[in-house]
Image (tube, rainbow, N blue to C red; front, side, top):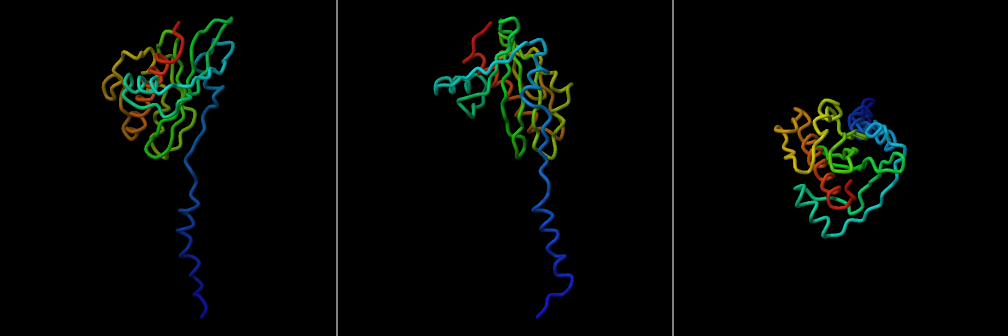
Length: 182
């Protein structure tokens, strides 16, 4: 028995769903983010850190969220051989996928800025808005980091907003616990 001529059309919607494109967008490389965050730096040197279980526990206590890896990606920014800041690249979950972002911190623990390197969600990309990211500038570990209070929520990007906010506070905790202070 032969199939009707339209039988192959029924499979098309399934194929379209299976082969739908991913929404991942890469905006900046690590090098580009470093230069955008600390443009006066002459060099960025990888600064390997392996966090101990006690440090991981202290980071969680200080930030309110767990650190996923014991080897964060950290670079020290220098100018004329003097440390002028840190850049830490991290990932947080959006709604379903990871958001890769970089945070720059002064030697004494103030946020210089936040850049989104890669965003993999279909919605919520408003966290790339420079006006929203600017709200982190100057923050320290002592700040509350409360969504809708000192950091505004973005309608349609609530999970991304919350998780980046929590992530930046966690990065400040990493700085406090594991990096030299200036």
